[in-house]
Structure formats: structure tokens, C-alpha cells
Length: 528
Ligand SMILES: O=C1C=c2cc(C(=O)O)[nH]c2=CC1=O
Image 1 (cartoon, protein in one colour):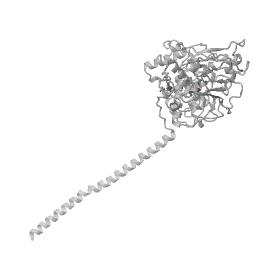
Image 2 (tube, rainbow, N blue to C red; image 1 turned 135 degrees about the vertical axis):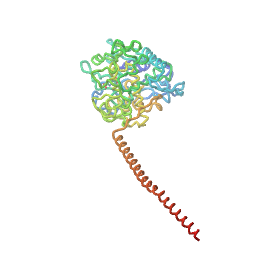
Image 3 (cartoon, rainbow, N blue to C red; image 1 turned 120 degrees about the vertical axis):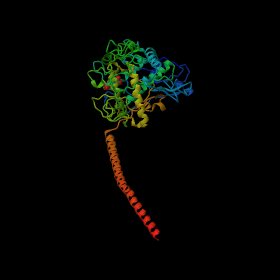
Image 4 (cartoon, rainbow, N blue to C red; image 1 turned 180 degrees about the horizontal axis):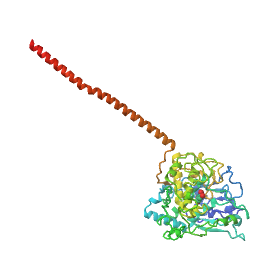
């Protein structure tokens, strides 16, 4: 079932992205978004007649959020998605999607029972044909209108246009929707004309949801691309950015585009990505006018890897050891569950702490360092997914997260249930995804639960100073013991050697004595 979805709103709030069949005036008034998979009249909501799913009440997180956000009631993203809908499809078994018409990731077939391997691999290890197919697929996603979704380009009060009848919606491509949803999750809270928008809010960064939000973000793109390609095994590759040094190894024309020979900040014209144009660039307008990013493309991608002369610290990529070190951290997150957390695996992989876990405001490591290293479109949070390197950078970040989950096998209780920044509590529905999906649902190892896996090897961790000292002391003791044992043996051997050295003399004497005795005996016998 391919359904075209349009976002229309008739309530008193900003409209975002919902399935077309849900945003009829009746649909919005009812607060219910439970379409049938076929879309045919008489077919049951959410495919309930065939056991695909049921229409249920949406549950939204009610628990307290952290103190960073003091404007409760002013932002449509709060208690997502209750401003818009309070009933949605909940799919059974391996069925999924807003109408339960799709299969869960990693499954295919009419009844979604057929397992399909989705294996994310190191992009540098792909064959030339695989590299070309991946680049072409990204480019196709940039040019293919999203089959299900359109975006609202105004906040709700302006959504119906000046005369109240011209709703402000646009088509958007699959890739640009990926960019847009990231922008929507990080946008400031508009507090009214003439008032500065509030920037201390971010539904996808600087908190525990950083990992779960970006995991779902990638799953959605991978899923949309699988549908576009009609290939349920299509898998996004990853970029191992922890290679140290100042060279961007994936910045070649067969992958993400080499540097232009003519302009330092541009991509070579031999790469298809030199033709891409970014969306969501007019961030000052959105914040001052209270508008929303739309699908209008503007400038080319800017990129100048290792070229930030003002910040030498971001001129080098993370080291392999940084990954090994961050994987040693045992706590998923620590109070205040923010970008200031110390000894937190999440804050470390996000890159606000040193790789060993200690928080330091001047440090940028791992994921953040990889973004800033790109020094251009990919280094600015509201724009970064416009550079396709974002996809590869985040699949690697997700691979590290998955490795941490495998090693630690955590209970969901280690993810904070309350007092995380708004959007980051365990049961919060991630903004702006539809149908609702909580952070908890992405806090599971990928292969067993989410239908994809990574083919990756991880660097061994280095020894700590204590371990080095302990090993040195033990080694020194062993050496001393060996020398002592050897010396003792030598002395004993020498002593033994001296004793043995006298025996031939004794033997001689004894021989001579016995010879003499024999002679005497012979003589006396002959006398007799
Ligand atoms: O796109 C991003 C860009 C970032 C820059 C920083 C920083 O630490 O200054 N962090 C970022 C996260 C992003 O997602």
C-alpha cells in the first residue's frame, strides 16, 4: 500500500507532519489517526480485521523534565504528539507503520514473517559497485518526493494563510525530510513577535535521547530508502571516523565528494553532491518571524575538513583509542543528564566529555568532533544532515551505541525516566516522529530487536596507569625471582660441581690403594 499523506491542520496549534488520511477536518477534530492499510472504505482501522493492529489511546510522558526548559505550554513539541492526536495505530507482531500496512525493519512478505538481513558495513570496505550504488541511492532519495508525507511551512497561527483558507503545505523529498525532521527537533521555541526565541531546548541533543533519537532518525531514512529501492535489505553503511589525523578518507569522488580544486570550501564537481542544495538555511528568519523551515533549496554544501584554523582542536579526527575508552564507561548517563554530565557514556560518545568520561566545557570529542572537523554545513546542528556525511557519521555513532548495549546488556531502568531535558525522558515520544515512538523503544540492541546489525571490529582498550604500574611491579618481581632462582642454582651447581670434581681423585686414590692391596696380596700368596 503506497499512501500519499498531506499535513493539514484545523486546530489551534502548529501543524507538522501526519498521514494525509488523518488530517481531514473530521480526523483532526476526532484526535484520532487510525487509517486502514488499504485506505478503502469499509476496511478496518489499523488493519484490525486481519490482526495487523489496533487503534489505541496515545500515551505521552507526563513526568517532570529538567530545569533547562522554563516555558511549559508554549511549544507544540511538548508531550508529543498530543497537541495533534490522541489516538493512533498500535501494530501487532511484525507489522508496523502509521496504518500497520508495513513490516517491521528486517522483515518482509505478505504476513511480515520473512526475515531479511540488514547489515550496515564500513563504507570504505564496499566494492566500487557498492559505493556507486550507495551514492546513487542517496541522490535518488534527494530527488524523490516522499510518498507519504508533506511538511507544514508555517506555525499553526499562520498555517491557513492570510485569508484563512490557503493552507501552507509542501511536498518534500525523502532525503530533505530527513534533514527537516532534524531541524524541527532542534529548533528554538518561538515566544511571540518581537521576543527572542528560546534556544535552551533541543529534543535530540545534549541528553540521553541523543542516541535513541538519532537511531530512529536513521531507521526511518533506511526504511524510506528500502521502499524507494524496493530492496528490503538495503542498509546504510557507516564511516569509521575514529582514524585520527587530519584527512577525510571518505571525501573522495567515489564516496562523499573530494575537495574542489577551485574552492577550498566546496565539493569537487566530479561528485554528484556538488549539485546538492541545502534546506533550512534561513534560521534567523525562522527564529525572528516564527516561521518553519520549508523545502526550498538554497546554497551548495560547504565543507572544509580540518580547515578550521581558529580552532586547532577540531582539526583532527578522533583516535581509535577514544572509541575504546568511551566503550569502557559503564553508566549510560549521569545527572543532570545533560551536556554537562560526567562519567556518562552518552555524553562521551556525543562528544561533550573527554573520551575517558570526564566533563570539560572546552573539550569536543567523538561525534561532536567529527561534526566540527567537517567545518561547514556538517558542523552546524540545524543544517548538518544536508551534508550526506551526516548519515555515515551517525551510523558509526549508532554502531558504538550498539556495541555498548551488547557489552553491558542494560535494563531499561538505567535510562532516566524523569528530570532529563525536555524530550529526553525514557517514555517521551520522540519529536517529530509519527506514529509515536518512545526513547525506550530504541534502547535495545539492534540485531535482536530492531532488525539490523553492524559488521564492525572494535579497538582494544589501552591499559590504565594503575594497570601499567601493577604489570611493571609484577614483571619486576618475576625478574628478581628468576635471577634469584638462577643464582641459587648456579651456586648450588658450582658447589655440586666442586664435590663431583674431587671424586675422580678419590677414585684414583682408591684405585691406587686397591691396586697396591692387590699387589700385596699377590706377593704374600706367592710367598706362601
Ligand atoms: O550537527 C551537529 C553539529 C554540532 C556541533 C557541535 C558542537 O559541539 O559544537 N555539536 C554538534 C552536533 C551536531 O549534531
